[in-house]
Length: 327
Image (cartoon, rainbow, N blue to C red; front, side, top):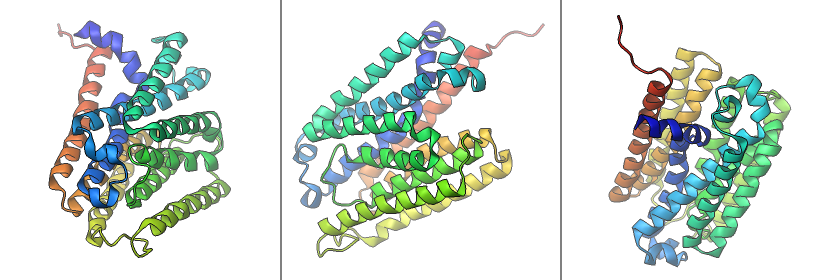
């Protein structure tokens, strides 16, 4: 077991695979939401007719593939910088060769595309578009925060539409997009990344967020019965649960910052909590609309995410600092 973990640990460190549960939760939510509301969201016929296990498995492939593709690409492009700033990373430390990292990058790209084929040709094209967006984010967006933060929100929100490009209830997509952008801005500043997040960059990011929010809300207004921003077939009380979870996340961020201070360590913690919270938002929407069974499935995914992070953290800790006997 130890030898297996030692061989696998560089790839798991590189892809930060446990955080991919956040992306999986968003695609699973859209599948479960569509199947729970076939009379309104039924244009995606494949999500209603095909077996649930196949759809969830394909969505997991898309989620893990896209997330691992993004972080692998990030580490490949940042290899020289990591040797100076983060020498513990697998590529910078030599635990994994550049050739192996490129093979992993291509493999995760293929996995995401294969998973998207279950949802149709448009889903494959959407996956390719998101991979292109991830490339732009890593090559350009990280060095221009105003662009990078907007792209980050779009990537997180956009992958929700892969299973169902005809999704009519778009408020969950807007919430995920906004959450990813705000968490990205907070952790960027707390981690003291360069270039600094200037006021001009913040204003530009807000303008970009307002533009894409307007696009989503216009589409929501256009597709809703009676041309309403909030569809009449969704009880407005459903928004209470995600709103409460958002308030709880603000409290968690405040407490972590008060305990750890405003620095890279706190930024890393908030980034992990921010990813985990996407699963909770999905549970909130489903609970608020009375779909308890689907919400339980999403809660199980959130628990699996926490357990996975904890187990891998402890396993890697034992690898790096094995237990021994005291004399």
